[in-house]
Image (cartoon, rainbow, N blue to C red; front, side, top):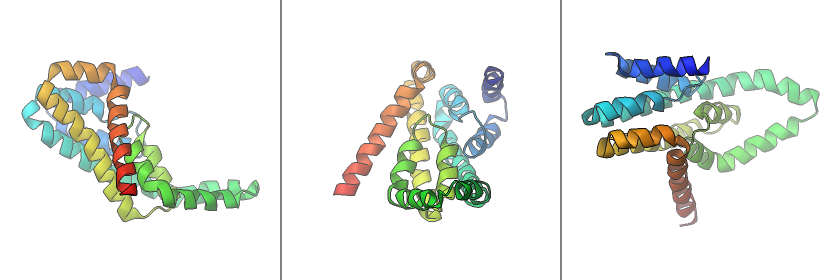
Length: 192
């Protein structure tokens, strides 16, 4: 089933409405959809390098808007569904501790996880569940998602088809390098 869905997403990249589908998939992936927008962004930017920056901007904006929906899901439904379970297990303090931990480290979590292949919806829903500062969440999401998508678009614009093949064969390497860069920046900025 996942392969069939993936094949359909790739077919959308070649359609005349590809930018619309890129926005839809980017939005949905940030809150509930299993396929990352990169599967559309990569072939679109490789085939139309002159529009790579536009595609990256569209992908970023839609992803952050979808992230806001994920945040809402976490903020509104986590308490309704998870709090009774935590209470039944006398683990109410665990939620308080989790929220305190997330308040301290949430920006780093958002920045690093937003670049990795780990589903971004986990970050958005968790941020809402922790009632993390919404404004900081949006800014950190713009930074991390923009870095990821603009990095991909820039590499594809510069190196074209060979980079497309590399990204498809080694997405974890590309995402890991980007996440490492952002993590390094977070550490440097935190201690300067």
